[in-house]
Amino acid sequence: MADQPPIRAELWELQPNGSPLPASRVPVQFNPETLKVSFANQVVPPSGGAGDQTSTSATQFVGKGTTKLSVQLWFDVTAVLPVDQQSETDVRKLTRKVAFFITPRPAENDPTKNVPPAVRFLWGTFQFDGIMESLEESLELFSAEGKPLRASLTLSLSQQNIQFAFSNRPTGGAGSGAGTGGPGASSPGTRPLAAASAGQSVQSMAAAAGRLGDWQAIAAANGIENPRQLQLGQLVDINVRVGGTVGLG
Image 1: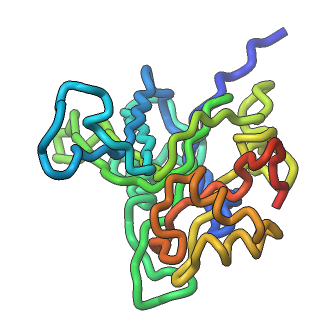
Image 2: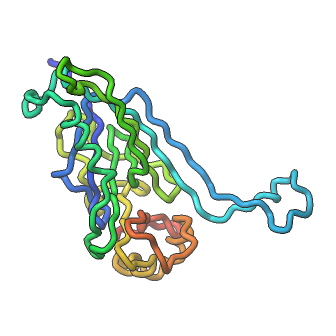
Image 3: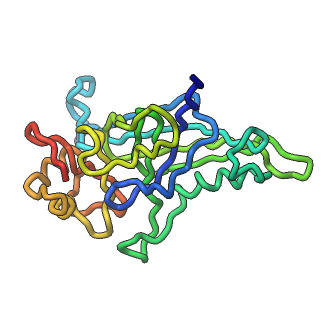
């Protein structure tokens, strides 16, 4: 029995409702060696400057957390390429597919504003939904004609939430089409995040999901300070657990 090909990490564009677009699938050429995930809470020093600054109460949590993913990817046109890419002689033809995810474009509901697409990084059971915050490309090898042949991409994704996300994607083989998800397709805590449209609030997003009565708990669980004014493209977990239940949207 032949060995199964390795599962390749992928980048997916997410629709405003948080569902991935299958046509946007970008498989990496080489799987990363490491994934770095960092979590941070927003804290502020006490006002006034008086009192015991050595106690833990001297620092105040302001109810907002972030999660960031840092990944380094490699692309090389001198390596074995898929059939549809074997004619490529400039590595930038491959890396531009990743650069798509950091490129702002007019928002669907407000063409006067530009926002980068929400993106999902998916590799086996690891899943991260967010916005591409930064992208650095290093060209490492050139042909005699001056064409770049090899490049490393260091990308950073972020989301305004503290989240340990797992994917229920089957790992029986690559190209299975899994990971597209759908209502009720994933276990609690792994459902896709919803991206806020222009002018949306937590209340309106919760109402659209049939959870208007939970909007305050949803805002608190996502660390949102101003639930009436969301940023365009801000990712919100509408399906958070509230009172021992999880909304199905």
